[in-house]
Length: 244
Image (cartoon, rainbow, N blue to C red; front, side):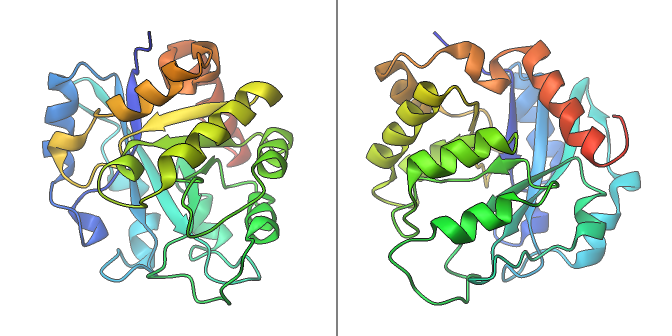
């Protein structure tokens, strides 16, 4: 039912706990007939993650490898209950897109039963474009409220295949509820692999099964259509004052 044309949540060896180079990732993407890939390395607060200067190096980053478009993103962590991000706006402006997330290795705020206000405050940052693994039961939020704010702020909600494979146990039913809420409110999602090894790139069958089970409309998945994807990409770049 769904044909995913590109994968925007991929980690290379630059993240410190992934196992493939950018070229290896691009080679697999080509084998799987993807049109584009996005490297979304963790921010500098993640143990082993790249130094802040990495995110200033977009000029050295390839825009294409073997006719596969390559985008320069980042997975930015929320650090505390004040919604502090681990990349400043100066560097967030230099990347192509920003993904926001919580990770227990990085989040140093108080443990709460509800993280809704923390996440929504982070979404107010214009350089945040995608919300990662929202269904993680470790960081519960009010899904209808977050979806509403995501639509208001023109953010895309990720359905992350890795959440159903090797991490974030208990995410499947939560992600199903999230997808149903996005469908109800008319928002947009993106399907990603969250690959940490090149062979995982473009692997999202569990996510697609979830979406098919609720008959999620493909026109609201931004990486099923070149036109829809380009529209969102243009909006991500326009905020940053530039074009691709």
